[in-house]
Image (cartoon, rainbow, N blue to C red; front, top):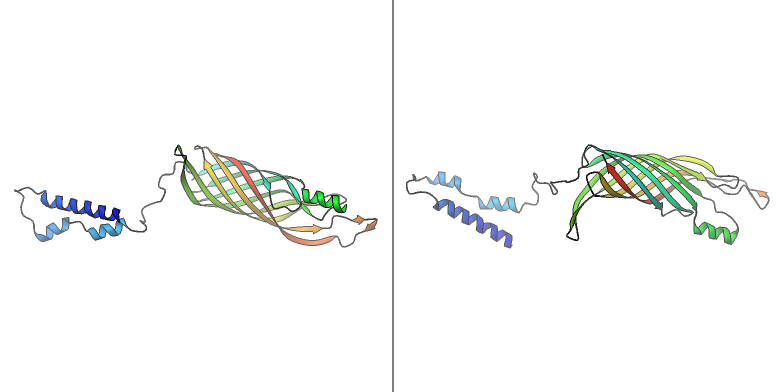
Length: 255
C-alpha cells in the first residue's frame, strides 16, 4: 500500500510541475492539446501492479551461460536401493546445450559391487546365497531440460549461480546373474530419469550432483544348480523390472 501511495504522489507532483512550467510568452493551448500531455494515472497503476510483463525476464542477466556449449562431467557415487549389493559407481557424461533450457547428453557408468551386510548375514545364518543380480555398467542417451536457474547469496560474501534440471534417457544396462557355477553376464534395454543440480564456480567449472533412477527388465535365476547333492530343476525365474537408484557427485568442465 505504501508503494502504491508513493507512486501516485510522484506522478501527481510531476503532473503539477508540467502544468506550471510554461513561460508567460507561450501561446495558450487548447483543452485537447493539454489533454494529450496528461499522464494516465490509472493506466500507469495497472502496468505497475501487473502480475506479469511479457517483455520482462525474471533473471535477465546470466553470468555463466550454457547455450551452444559442450561439457564433460567426471562423477562418482553410490547406489542406495540395492537389496543385495553395495559399492561405488564411476561415470562420465558428455553433453551439449542447444540453448539455456534444452540439451542432450551421453552418459556411461561403471559399477564395482560386492555383497552387502544383509547378504553376508544371510550366508552366515543359513549357509546359502540368495538369488540376485548384480549391476555392472550402463550407458544412456538423454534429453535434458533445465527449468530452474537462480542466484543465491552465500553469507553475504559472494553470489552463487546454480541451476536444476531433469534428464530423460534410453540406453542399455549390463548386469550379471549370480550363479553357483559362475556369474552369467547379461544386458537389458533400460530407461533413465534423473534430477541434477549444478553450482557454477567459474565460466568453465561447476559442481554437479545427480539423483539417477534406471529401470531395466532383467532375467532372473536361482543361484544353485546343485544344492545338498541334488540337482535343482526349474532354475529360470523369468524376468523382472529392476529399479536402480544412485547418487552421484562430480565436477563439470564447460568448453
